[in-house]
Amino acid sequence: MTQTPFPDDFLWGCATAAYQIEGSPLADGAGASIWQRFSHDPRLMAAKGDTGDVACDHYNRMADDVALMKELGLQAYRFSVAWGRVLPEGTGRVNQAGLGFYERLVDTLLANDIEPLCTLYHWDMPVALDDRGGWLNRDSADWFADYGRVLFDRLDGRVKKWVTLNEPWVVTDGGYLHGALAPGHRNMFEAPIASHNLMRAHGAAVKAYRETGKHEIGLVVNLEPKYAASDSPEDQAAQRRAEAYMNRQYLEPAIHGRYPPELKEIFGEAWPDWPAEDFALIQQPIDFIGVNYYTRNVTRADDSWPLNAGPVPQTQATHTTTGWEVFPQGLTDVLLWVKENYGDLPLYITENGAAFYDPPNAEGGRVDDPLRVDYLRKHIAAIGSAIEQGADVRGYMLWSFLDNLEWSLGYSKRFGIVHVNFETQARTPKNSARLYSQVIATNAATL
Ligand SMILES: N=[N+]=NCCCCNC(=O)[C@@H]1[C@H]2[C@H](O)[C@@H](O)[C@H](O)[C@@H](CO)[C@@H]12
Image 1: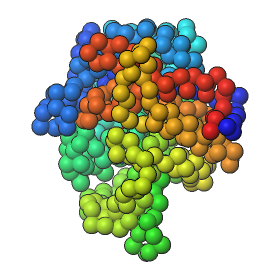
Image 2: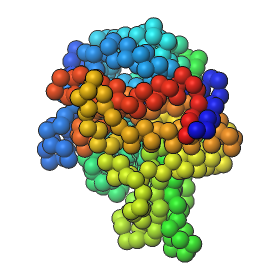
Image 3: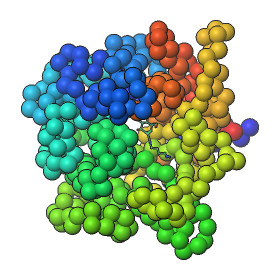
């Protein structure tokens, strides 16, 4: 066994998101989100009948869940705020009961020596704002900044690491281009507009934070390294398009105040001429980049829409139940790619994990999940390798603490290191949770 020690102050935690775990989406005056609407629409939801009405019932079980985080030795916990709990109409009136839940969550975490990392937007826009155009409305930047101010004013200081957006790529590719996620639009002209307004909103929220904030704020992007299938010019160009579309579309404007040129090539007439002043807003300096890593993509030229670039199936590799290749090297590669392209901003792995079939094991409530244990060992070692090569990685938020609602795929895709029996709401740490506790205790990767 080889041990790779991590930096002394490396932060080990887990990540979740409001709509995926909380349940009670309309409790205590909360306003419905686009996921409340989407999950109840059998025409849209792939896993028909799987809604966020109960989920992991975390809204009612928060204290016990935090106690379990403490038992596992978590040092940090990345959660998201349901915008509609705090601002039921999205703007204006503050729902103190909703804000109070997050205040209790933060205080309970701190009382258990667990650092809170708070994500403002993890996909659940209030329907009241979606009905006003949602991310297609340029006013969304102001709506989002005002929402951020409510949270910054109440929680900054207790929360010292803020995230504006979780994965703007998934929000627009899933919600506006392909329609697989809320709000379920399929429109090539809408996707760039939603993307751009999301990034304007990111900038506006960072700017609002700098008015009073005394700590750190960053952006979380999902990065999937693209490896050209061959040296052919066609595959090389396909790799550049795929990398620009998923991996550069958000970091380029946030860090460099520009878009990659491939996006105009991809979207053509659907790619607007953006007002120059928008980039000054988007390019607000941030304190860290959050990287969500799950898998890689071997990319070749094909006739798929809209990229004319698609994956080469890696049939020999292990895959998760979401169909993603297990490829730990991609995590090392993508962390070094961020360093090379976006400089030495501190990095956090804000999500990494895998869904596998986890047969609950009756004996003593154990859940044996060897594939996830292996996945975590290898990906944590991959981070150690990136750190050894100069990447300034400060923490790791494992996805996810609990089995939860995997968006349109429902509850069958289990990412948790803690098994949830959705009939009884019983929580059972899996063997992967025990492994993670050891990693945290030793502050080292062991392979
Ligand atoms: N093909 N392929 N490529 C992989 C692309 C991954 C894009 N999806 C994510 O990153 C989502 C992120 C989300 O924050 C969380 O809310 C989700 O539960 C996890 C698990 O799905 C991940």
